[in-house]
Amino acid sequence: MEDLKIGVYVCNCGTNIAKVVDCDATIESASRLPGVAIARPYKYMCSNPGQEMIVADIREHGLNRVVVAACSPRMHEPTFRKALQQAGVNPYFLEMANIREQCSWVHEDGAVATEKAKALVKAAVLRVARHEPLERRSVDMCPDLLVIGGGIAGMTAALDLADAGSKIYLVERADHLGGNLARVDLTAPYLDSARDMLTDRMTRVVEHPNISLLLNSEVERLEGFVGNFQATIATKARNGNAADQVATVDVGSVVVCTGYKEFDASRITHYGYGKLPNVITSFEFEKMLREGGVETKEGKAPQYVAIIHCVGSRNLEFHAYCSRVCCMTALKYAHEVKSAVPGAYVSDIYIDMHAFGKGHEDFYRRSSEVKTLFLMYAKDDYPVIRRADAKDDCEMLIEVNESLSGETIEIPADMVILMVGMEARDDWADVAHLVNISGDKDGWFIESHPKLDPVATTTDGIYIAGACQAPKDIPDSVAQARAAAARILGRIAKGKLEIDAVFAEVDEDKCSGCRMCNELCPYTAIEFDAEKKRSHIISALCKACGACVAACPSGAIAARHFTDAQIFAQIEGVLA
Image 1: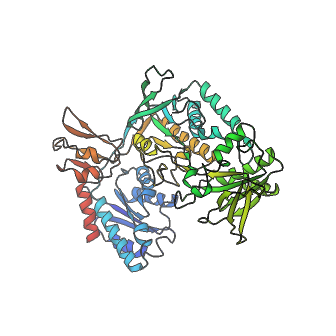
Image 2: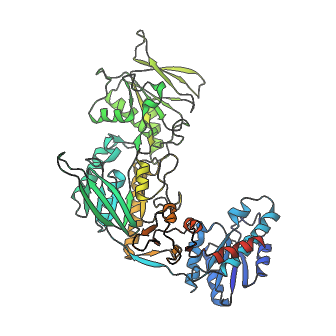
Image 3: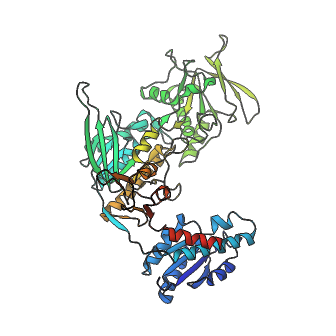
């Protein structure tokens, strides 16, 4: 083994670490470990001065290994690898010890936290001594792209990518573009026409020379890896006697924009949806508005209109999350009812009023000025709707336990609009399996990181945008679609794609061909060579999770950067 010169750096992380862990004692302990040439503390190691300190020490002291004791490597391992690379050292000669999440954030006793930090640093020092120089690989990047879903997010992503010169395959299962937005009349808070907004986008998509629009189509299969996917797309024949058309296309990346579905209001029985004829959903009311009038099933202009929020949302029985768009849409309805039937009385029955977007608070104020009656109810104390008696001057009565006044109030109604929330599409699991991504407990697709990487997924080359990721309004959907497009264009501009050097490898001489690893791999990175009767790992898909390494009965699989020698050295350091 080469002459080791290890630099150890302990981050105070402001007071996140230093207020619990004795950083000076940790440094003193590390300085006595074999191979350690220098040990330093610093307030913020991830800052530019912190990184520059590492670069300077490598050049001045000839360091060939670096240990950084700080936060989770998920946050800053790439940061410190770049610092090593800048100084001319292989970036994989770095090891991080997580003394924030694993020490200072979980222990109140400073002495215990400090001893644990010392052990983790020693483990890192012993492990980094066993590190091997690894080199990243590069693969060609196919510039053609696939967008699944033709709603506002899908069209936005397709247009941004196509305008940059890429060939786009835009796949939509319906026979038209627009998604759920195509069912909307006006948009809050400025009451702009959704039809006008979509017409512009649709026209550009249809006429764009770089967009191949595939309506009545679905992606049946997606194979390959980032930069080199093969998508099989089936298009339904317009003539029922003709066969479906199936095409296979090569694409470099995929943007999933499959949207959402509306909550089924009949699941909440006390609102009478499906039984009381003039209890309708928000989308049914949108259809009424698009057709040019506001009237009851009997063809009369309603004198009393009630709007009920959070139907299916913010409800532990159905969905605990907020659907985000309902409050402002309800205020929009109040304006549209007043415009269509000037003499109508509008009641807005809500849990909380969420006016978080640009212009929304002003819109709320303007709604109160047009004499909308606002009534607040508790989250689990729903309004109850019943038919009115013949003596009442209305069709229905709504009983509300009004939270602000503490009184039970009866509201007359000739029409009740239920603000149905968003929920994941029924086929979300099939889509997730198709593109090899994950969904949460509610069926929304999971992003790589909720703050730092909200459009990427854990599968490289697969991006998500719009309301398939979580409930969101039009501006957020458009922003996310454009962000996904920007991420993809950044990769295309490089021409080649760099693959992480950390992945598992199969020793074919030891492989028995049992295929156990094929079934276990969560990233579908392992394929079986029927001719050789051996398994093979696609390095571009592998995430080095170690499932195959641990499970292989023949011991034929090894993970680069997680060898037995490295792991045993780390264990020795922790237990010493």
